[in-house]
Amino acid sequence: MSRETLADELAEQLLQGILDGRYRAGAPLPPEADIAEEAGVSRLTLREAVKTLRAKSVVRVERGRGTFVNPPNRWTDLSALMRAATASRPTANGAVPRRLIEARRVIEVGAAELAAARRNNAHLDALEATLDDMRAAAAGGEVESFVTADIAFHAAVLDAAGNVFLAALLDPLGRLLVEGRHQTSAHADIRAHAIEHHEAIVGRDPLGLARTGERSDARPHGSDRARPRNLRVAVRPVGRGSGGRCGALNPARKSQPPVSRARRRVPGLPLRR
Image (tube, rainbow, N blue to C red):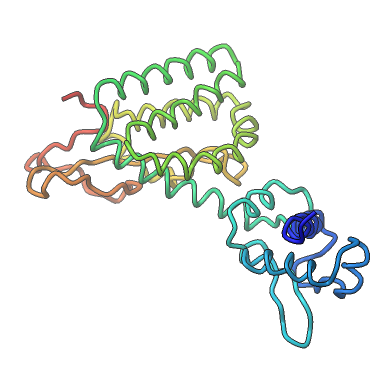
């Protein structure tokens, strides 16, 4: 077996040891001679493995002191971060799942903004169909079917956004949060709230959403709170005066003044052209 292949395998073994808690964040790795002897490889192969982990910021080398494990919030490799987020050991501290949820929220809010500007009637039909599936599953208390329909709704928003990179970025994050969706969707009141919020995104009552959005922090359901709130944002395409660009998505605030009659009425996401 080539040294490169051995180095890759050893890098994987070291990473797994970090995830398992054998090598803890902030602590040094064992001496080179010990790791090389245990793994049955040369020191040169070990150094190549450490180099691989350094490139991902999983470890750092402090001259004269040794090689130290970095905490997951300093890692730069998405695959390693995903594994840390699902690990059951102390390495996967609470910061990683929270940052994961934040990243997903940023992507989904941006996707909804693009969807507001680019959606067509076919996209709206798909969103309404997934909402119907969510309602039917909620009425029957079918958690698995509800989660499936919920995920399909978010996929339909991404499809309406018309940007393949967004879907590619969100897919691995969404897969990690599926378990959380099952846990939260097991509660009937959360299922009801999810449907209400998804209806607002589709735009059944965009102006009413703007007036009541203060009750939400734009956090997607399945978050790290005991009762996470669903995404409630006002999708407000700006009129011709701004060159047709889509306006910002901001959680609306109760303190906002009522919409003046003098102002142009802003359509929501689903108004058909």
